[in-house]
Image (cartoon, rainbow, N blue to C red; front, side, top):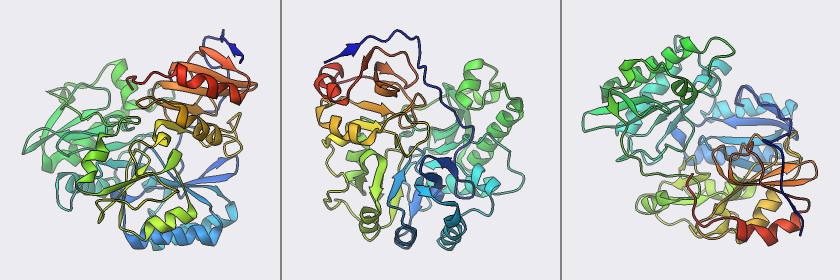
Length: 404
């Protein structure tokens, strides 16, 4: 087995970081066609909508649907000639905004256990209504909101720039991502306060050199006192590699995990027939009317399934920037990742599948760089020239427990 200690200070792979996220109106070119992302309002699909997506996949030969870290859905390999027909199909299902600008603003993640009329549901609907208005602030493309008003916040590890979290029976905390304190406002004012914070950020993000995400802005200083009054509430710490949400879900809605965030068209069609679906940022869906999900070889229902321990991007050839295939390697390594451990396999230095630190393998021109703990663009600790070398080494290199 050949392990080479890497000498570079950081990833040398040349990657292009796009400044925007794909949508339905504005797909993103990739290695196998376009990536078309579906932003599902409130993260909920009726059975009719879920089955309608399955029908569109069958009609257009789309073999896989992906669950993203922002609780969106996406298709890869969409061809330009299919785009108009897919847009019409999404519109008929109630899953398309009026235009690309409205779609780009409507980037709202919700805690998935909401009930009709509860705090999360009412605030999220109010925020979505305001973001659809022409006067809503023009925000950077990746800017988003998290409405996290359950008993305790559970979306801290998910990407968001403005967070709405519980405080007491009558008030919520609206805070900037990365800030330890926020503004306390009545529930009825939560959406307006979140938009005010977003509008302040938009005014400060006009130049190309200005931070385009809230956490970077907060780290640079200058957050107005208005949003620094009360401490952020305690979180339940839900994250990739740690699944307390599965236990919570057991009492309310069954969960189904998607291996590496991907479900085949046939698996999605079977899932769509079961129940209305709630999307989550953990590459899983919740089944509204089930407390126990049926077993299926194409999805995950066991919290001990080793496929929950790995994250991987689509890799080559699906992504033009990926240097090597990632999905087969990640699945082959999963059984060798110790219980409680986790592994990120990335086709390039962008780390799309898992942007936070973790034990990671990064594709290089002549093999794989090993990062003991870090983001995909971190300095490598070792290098492997052949895939088979990884299986022999990975169980000894991944600790059973690491913070994320």
